[in-house]
Every structure is written in structure tokens, then in C-alpha cells.
Image 1 (cartoon, rainbow, N blue to C red):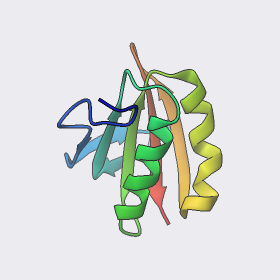
Image 2: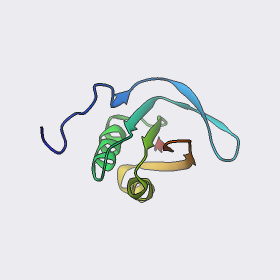
Image 3: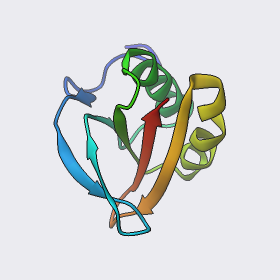
Image 4: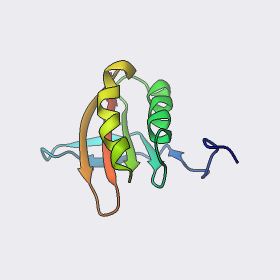
Length: 101
């Protein structure tokens, strides 16, 4: 088993649901990337892959419990053609919300 091998079958799920931003507005999330339990750089690599597959206007939710990755993803958005919509602390993870430009 390699460092970047798949740990779960559902790391990326295409489940549409609503997410609330910090300002109270809601967005429709088209993909959820489950990075809970993953260490750097896996969350960044999975985010890069998801942004590469996304269509313009798609909203992506990345679930992360690694604080270093939470800090690293927003600055990546300019290189990936995306926008960081917000990061919300949940009970056991951070919900990082992104949009493909």
C-alpha cells in the first residue's frame, strides 16, 4: 500500500446538497471530497483533481480534519481557476467550500 493509495471507495462523492456560507447565504454543492484522516499533501492533491474535473460554476465541498491542509487550500485557488467561498468549522472537521471559475 503506497502513500497515495485509495483508502476509501467514496473519497469523492457526487452528492448534491445545500451548504450554508458564513454570511448566511446557501450554495448547491455538486461534489464532496472526503479527506478526513488524510495528511498532507493528499487533501491538496484530491482538491486539485476535483477542480480539474469540475465545470465552471460547480461548487465543491472538501472535508478536512488536518489544519495544515485547511490553511493550504485557499491559496491554491488562483492556480486552479477557482474561488475559496469559505471555511466552516464543524464538530470533527472543517468544511472548505470552493467554486470553479
